[in-house]
Image (cartoon, rainbow, N blue to C red; front, side, top):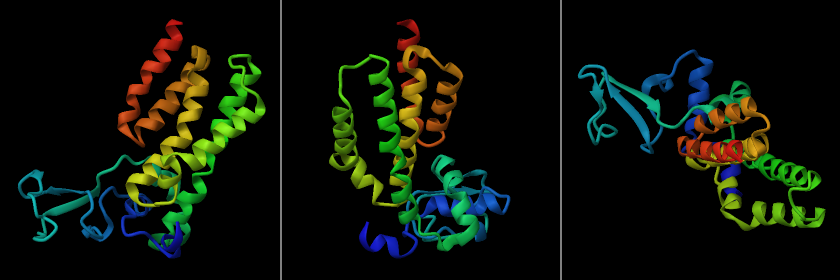
Length: 201
């Protein structure tokens, strides 16, 4: 993560959203987004989305919002409650990223212990290491910015979803995990197919 750990990243949208939540609102505090990276804008005068170039021609009627799903903001909220907008989000997400390989190991171990796979403990550890350090997950984990933070949170929830959805053993928990995935990355909704296939099997 290098120099990104020294302070807030330039695209710390979830820190701003968490700060807004702590102040009881959805819009960006001060109604001034830092930067021009994927903020949502609504014009209260025209009751429409703000026009292109609105970052460079701000108006009093514009209201600014984080355009990403909110779960990562809820995850980082305790840190923001302590450090405010100075929260070192890259450091937070890099540390949080360790949860995903740990939960992947839990999933693989459970499948091994239930006889669903012939892999050994060594095989499982090797797969987890390859996932953590040999895939795009490693790149995402050290970025810290908004889009990658969403990936890091989704990758922590995904093994739990698969664990609960396997054999359709815990449908309520699988549904909860799928809902949390949707609140992180809406494209993960397609994973409902996995549960349906397991239920049918």
